Length: 431
Image 1 (tube, helix red, strand yellow):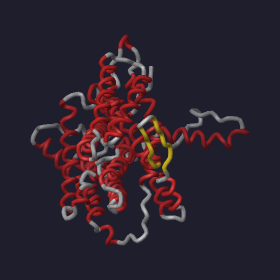
Image 2: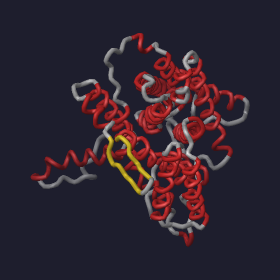
Image 3: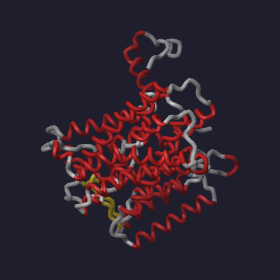
Image 4: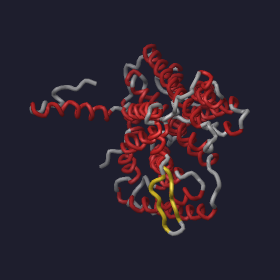
């Protein structure tokens, strides 16, 4: 990225050593690809550490029990890896819920004409990978439980790869990818809630229902103080955690309870929280999650390992299943007249986006932690499949979109559509 001299006047000579790195850092953090690059770096670092003499220290720290909390009969005692996966990821899902709610009420998912094509594409993009994985792993009931792993899309990585080609692609295509990823997240949340919860504690579930009712009441009354939602949201998270339902769903429920509309034209609490949390989630929470979960030991890995049912099922599901499901569903929706093709987009563009959606990474890794019981031995195989399937999808999608952009270059963009796309991804800037 070039930086014009007049935009950043040179400081005094004595500070020039610190000037250029700070300018580079500020410009880097403005890039849409920044979050994806940081995630990739953390994943690579985790792989390096997990295959070095530091492997014992890495696993020892992650599985060290920390932060024991006891209040009467209530006790929370978990290893670091679960505080990350159950606690920090609840904040991630909270942000996802905020974004989904805003898009449904005011954004890209607020009208039938806007939502029908990405909904069809998302359904195809979840169904086909799941079916492919289930067919490949059908001989093992335990392995089959991971059918949802290749159904997910990592929006940060997908948008990061998309932005590498940038202005040469139609903005409508970015809107399509954003809407597709948002609906995909909603589908993943639903799958987790329905299929990956065990041993329900009915009493804690009732307590959670009571706190949820309070949060709904706060929403109905359009209470605009975030502290109330934090207090009852934390109480809901604890009850959901102890109930046997996965704790991250508490983040989703609290997010849906945050009001978008407020009294007396005051600033929207939902949009303010979305703005405030976006950098924290993108640049801190998700990188920590990636570093904690992407460390796969390659000791003993051979070509035959890639052909094992779980590994092969995840790779094929992400790379082939996603593009077949999304492209096929989009083709059917357009050809039957159910939906319209994104403006200025070609079938080559749609194929490239379908491949990018095969970058599962964050959500796929998260579902892996839920799908298999400890000691089953499938977790490393699934993680290896996720890393390879996501890598192949990223490279394939980048190549196809590059070729499509050269064949059908975009010379002029619709300013209104461009603004809509930016508002759909960029966080709220405040008053």
